[in-house]
Image (cartoon, rainbow, N blue to C red; front, side, top):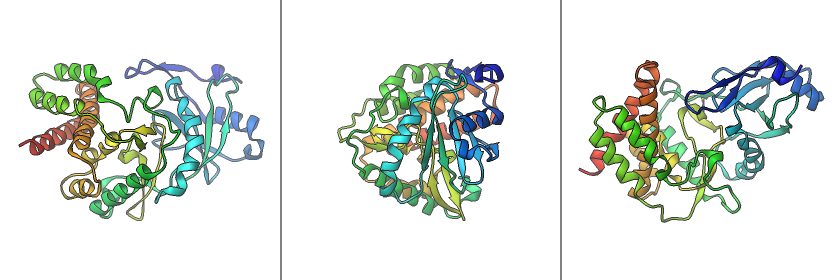
Length: 313
């Protein structure tokens, strides 16, 4: 049975990109056809397996990840090439590619098999000491940034321009502010955004993760143990990796994270810009149809604006 026979395409309202639904039986067919030595291993969906990829357990110690749309397909070969080169320089575990699958059975993109990383997705309840967690993450990011960036991919469509200029999202951000008129402090949001996107980098590009969020951080025994999902990785401005300061950290933990990273005010301003952009477009989309998404976006938006006001008081 081919992919086109037992899977259907759906269209994402967020991206207007074709996405596909992938089930365990199809993954078993792919495995059997290309990696017969793993053909008898059970395949089960991973809970909270992500949006860019569909993720499955393969046996007890492997995962299979398949891009869910064309716009995510370039991430596969990028991770296969660069993750093994970065791993020796990093203080925490990151995904370990074991094999790369070819397009087959009508499925049009490459896909990956990784070693399974133990741990639970980071939540406030699972973290023993949020300040120490922030310091551990800062240490990881500094090690990543110190790794030789020669030959690494610059910002572009492959990582949604993470590490590049915020200007690319300028029109989208202003539209979101207009859409939210009367429900947010539009003047403050505009001030924070304008101050952020107009700052320039002025420093050599470094390796970035591209999407540092609680969902991409694993916790073991209350401590940060691994960083996953490097699909947005690249070489560029590290400001985009600071978004976690407002999405996960607050108060003492945010201060600790900031103090551990030797960045100038411009980088932190652009970090607020990345957080602001995502919070605004998320709130504009979900304010009427998804209370959880909207509540979280508003929390981040309020934190970013408050931080901006403190820094420019």
